[in-house]
Every structure is written in structure tokens, then in C-alpha cells.
Length: 292
Image: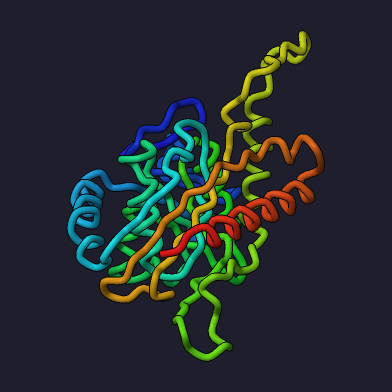
């Protein structure tokens, strides 16, 4: 596993650690007696090479084909091949992360997805497993600074981050009472994805300021790594609403949404709102297009 630094290109198999302000990573000081312990709310994520080498093919060739009758994937050509990427899928089942990795993971995009996951999903034996497959915890009620900073660092290091913008899993069953959630509906977007995307672009832009400020030698007309951050909407639909054994599933990957243009037109707060409106509109269109 590779420890990432801002001056180096990350490898595909990565381990990224984020520490809160006023805390230090292990061995940060040459003098052990002067080093600070890791803060209990520090957040890290890793992708284990040996575990992905076993589980990804197992899921691709055995688990998913055995459970689902048919898996239809479209739009993989829309996945960016460079720069940081946020995948924004709809969320109807705990199968969704597996399907996202299947449709957009390393064999397709060249990047291992890192998942922002509810804290209760990263506990126990399951948590031990998913933490080694790129997941890291976030409190859905009030996201801690450690999780947000880690998501930011992943994007700065040009990684692929998966955030379910609806915020929760909407378990859906067809043909039940009208009070049940509608499987055709895309639910209200949470604002966190847009804010994180805007902050990532701004943070990367600050890092990429030219060293020679006196000469004002800016490179014009060239996209910097930070400005290439894109959000990819993904619609996941199951023929049974909530997946059942031998149901069909469709994964439709939409066109990437560039973050930079919204920032060039307006301030950060309005840009984040505009981005989320565009993501919701794209997901609605994809969801209506797909018929599992």
C-alpha cells in the first residue's frame, strides 16, 4: 500500500490517512517522546491489493451473476479517465456499492473507488472487510471533520470517491401501499456532495498557485488537475424495486458534470447548490430512461 503525498502521483492500490488539525500521524517527530498520538477521530481508507484480487473477481463472475438474472450496464464511456471523480449513484439497496465497483471500478476506469459510508456499516466483521475495500465512515446526522477532510484529500490526490447523494438507502417494494417510497422517484439531494466538490477544486487551485508570484506567470488555457474534478451521476434500478433473488438490475452511467464552470460563474455556496441541482436533474433523466 502506498502512502500518498501531494507531490506524488498515487498508485492504484492506495492507503490515505487524514488527521485533524493539531494532531500528528505516527512517527511525525524524529524524537518518539515528542510525537503526538493519533487523534481518535482521524479517518483513513485503504484498498487492499490481495483482498481486491480475490473479492472483485468473485463478485464479478460468481456472486452477481448468481443473484441477478440480468445485469445491464450502459454509459461506461462517460467515466473520466483522468482527474478526480465523484460518483453519485442512487441508493436502493446494499447491493449498490458492489454494483458501482462492478460497473465503474478499477478494471473499467483504472481507479479503485473509495466509499463514503454510514458509520454503522464500518463496524464489526463487515466493517473490517469494507474498510479494506476503500470505505470510510461518516456520520449521516452530522459529518465529522475527519471524514470530510479525508474525502477532500482523496479528491486532491485524484482518486475516485463514491457518495450517495440521496443520503440514505431507500428500501423499496413495488405494488404495495401508496405510502411506500416510489421506485421511479429520485429523492432530494443532500448538500454535502456539492460543498465537498467545490472545496476540493478551491483547495487544489490554492496548491497549484505559481511559485513566481512577482512575475504572475499563470498558465492560461490549460486545465489543472483540480479543475478537472467531475461528478458522474449513476442510476441503479432493480426490476423488483428492492432487489430480490433473480431480479434484473440496470446501471446507467450519465455524462460527467464538470465542477469548475459553476465556480467561475458564482461564489462557492451558490456553486454547490447549482451542482446539486444539476446532479438531481441528471439522475431524474437517467432514472426515467432506465427500465429494468
